[in-house]
Image 1 (cartoon, rainbow, N blue to C red):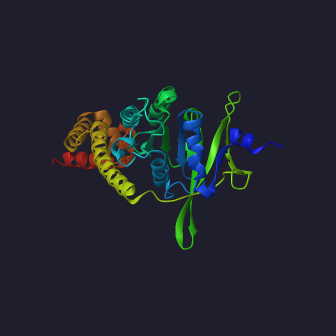
Image 2 (cartoon, one colour; image 1 turned 135 degrees about the vertical axis):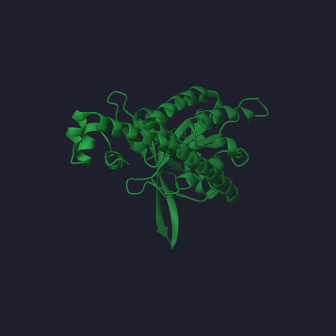
Image 3 (spheres, rainbow, N blue to C red; image 1 turned 45 degrees about the horizontal axis):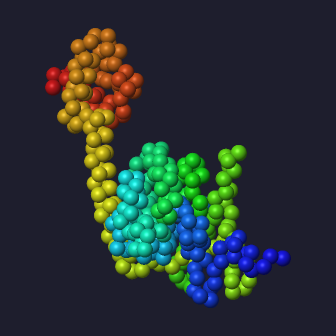
Amino acid sequence: MQGSSDYVRVYMQYDPRKGDKALIKLFEKEIYDNRRGFVISITGNNRRLVGVGKSYTGLKIGEQMDKYLLEDIDKKVVWTPKAFIEAINYWDNRRQRHTGETLPGQVVILDEAELLINNRTFYSFINRAILYILSTFRYKRGMAMVITPHISFVDVGVRKLMEYVLFNNKVLENSMQTVYTNPRILIKDYYTGNIYYKAPRIYNVATGTIEKLSSVKVGLPSEDLARAYEERARKFKDKLGKDLLKEIEKFEESEFGSEEDKKNQLDELAKKVLDTPELRDRLMNNGRVYLDDLRDEFGLTYSQARRLKRIIEKMWKGG
């Protein structure tokens, strides 16, 4: 039978008697013992994608890993791929006094950025960003958290670059909503391309046993951090809403033209129908026009066909 010293070498050890947090100790082992940075995803579960405390879980983990998170929240909690890269570069502003090297254990939280752009474009950015992170983590030793509603939203190629995924769930406990997260190590089979999810194993110093870290209760982040996050999130989403409205207006204008352009186009079509005997005979019957014929002839929507019908009939009557 292995001695406790063997367990210490193989497994992450934690001592609940000292107030150790198993999940945080697991992540600290990656950074300080294994001396490497890593990427995780925090997601919902198969039954519930939203409202399971994903962002607050990221904040809670983040403030326990990175003591400067609140001070640096404008740089380290982000919603866009560009800001994601800038956050990693910003880590260099925090350095160890005795070595001058980048302070290890810093975090960046990319919060549901797929709201911003379509998945294909989003994950092509994220894929390159994560590759960049991994190439710089040898000396930066940071932790990146990608928050998304479900792990399936993350491209398979990106998943293969992640170390852990946390599946969140919210349950009713003593008349209160409580968040639990289920951490899983991502095991990649590079021959078959398959990805497997396995609960981490940890060594409990207090009991001298190996335990499976299958479910962890997540508390709330500090009030100051939560307040700062909500303010940033509100500003971002307000701006996102305004930007989306502008994009929709641009799309409609480019796709269909302005209201005046659309009227002019329909007027031109009406004149074409009335001035072309072949079209007039095919589309009109005793001064009446049929919507389906107009739609088939010009590829119009019902709304466009109705407007064109009114214009043609008005012109026919001399209006």
